[in-house]
Length: 94
Image (cartoon, rainbow, N blue to C red):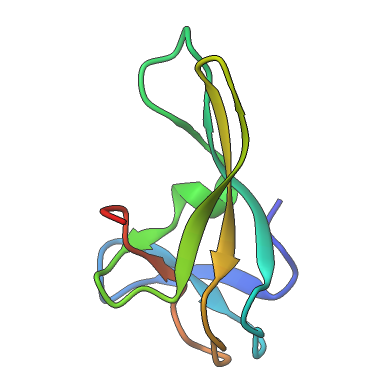
């Protein structure tokens, strides 16, 4: 499930996106967004990762919280204060 502080709605970036329903402080952990499991090509995305849009002007970062063999788990962490109504964005190139 999504954290209580966000919702999914139409995005001006692309399709649907995740938006803050309240002010979110820097360093907030949205939870696991992407999971890499060796038998699966690519990543499994949780609801947080599935609606996350890319932007070079991101307000979050993917932090690897588990890394063993080829298994990887990433959590989404805010890098600044995110205001109510603002879209949650990540730069996948970082």
